[in-house]
Length: 212
Image 1 (cartoon, rainbow, N blue to C red):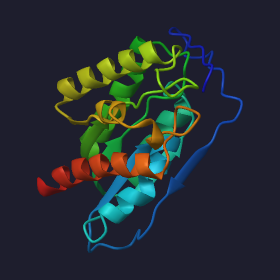
Image 2 (image 1 turned 45 degrees about the vertical axis):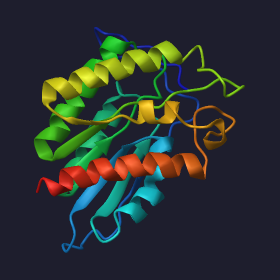
Image 3 (image 1 turned 180 degrees about the horizontal axis):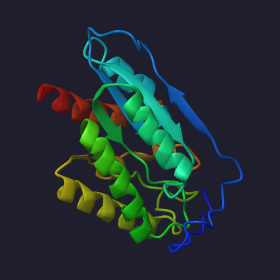
């Protein structure tokens, strides 16, 4: 998890995580027989990518953009926008809320809204609510993340309402998971968990594609 500080005036004091990473994966880039869709998120997005890809087989080609970089980072904003502009995506599914721990809810909302406004100006966009973080017992939510996830999800829902974007409520979905679906770190999921998440992600994308 991150330890980020944010200077609202200068946007200058951004402490990076000890390890920062960014991965982009695009397949069938020249195939025009199917629409292209994209997932934007973090390691959880990477976790369900391959399953969503199978769910969309024969329906759409799937790319993903996953990173740990903070939503307040200029690198994050610039690279997401460049990624979106690089291909003609029919749908983008956005799921990003479990990094940049130190960023307050208001700043998170401002940064996400600006980015989602851009994405929505380019293509159909789905906002996913952020999944929960459990403690080491896997029986209760992590006390450090519980309120932050709740606050960020409220901001995401407000953005979705304001921009008239559909919501994929992964938070509610994962709260109903058996603990056998969740890894010991309390953040990530095993194959069964990712399979359940992927069903919701794929259905939300299919819904958008059906709108034409």
